[in-house]
Length: 333
Image 1: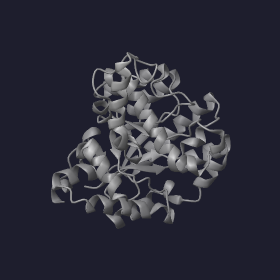
Image 2: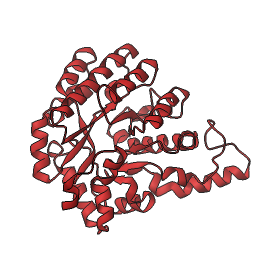
Image 3: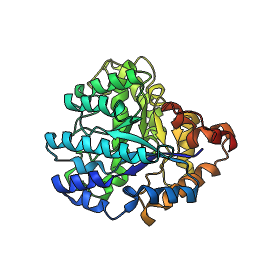
Image 4: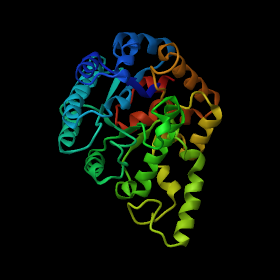
């Protein structure tokens, strides 16, 4: 079974609601690609390239920037309901992931609703929450509940606040977003989140950003800081009891490195086949997003992975963390 663990949607009900209440360029651009809201068209494409299931993750986090908190609450509920509704029409093909653009008391109630009443399998957060790092105190209630309920948390990069001259342009999305993912992972590690909740499951975009390439630097810097008796690489926690790389390897990660076999091997070498999942950013990219899923799938298959590892990457890992039932089709591939 082949499962895309990181594909994007924006159902029409949500698109209409955001266009009415908080219009902007980010939202206006979404209407140009009907794959974001046309489930039947998505299914025809999936059948054409041999993808059995897709995880549905909300698109374009920047559209939440500058939105008043009460409106965030209102539109988050619409987002979660509409994603759940889309998945419910084709429950054997689409796997819904909800979204929490912020975390506060109302959104914790929404987390309980989306994982209970709405039957959503996971939740999406962003690499920073209105500029706050992911180990901020406001986020810990979510981590406690997600760990208790074994609900995986998807992380999508959000615009950071590094340089004014970036002006949230394509350079920010090109290199800034993988860097944002890297920083988010680092705060979860050095901020003690994975130390307190070692079984908490996070799914990153773009194969963990810079982490596979620079994890050994994190270990080296941690040793240097220990030598000078500093507390940590952040001001948020005590020093880690083990190597940072041991914590970074706890993340699950999609395979969206745009067809780079070298990057894919680097990620697999670091995380292991049990922590990497086929994920494509569909329907972003050229040709209404049709190119990248084929490109990424071809790259994975070109690596010559053992059959057991290939099965894990193409769908087994995703099914395991979501506790989905075993499919007879898995035995036929």
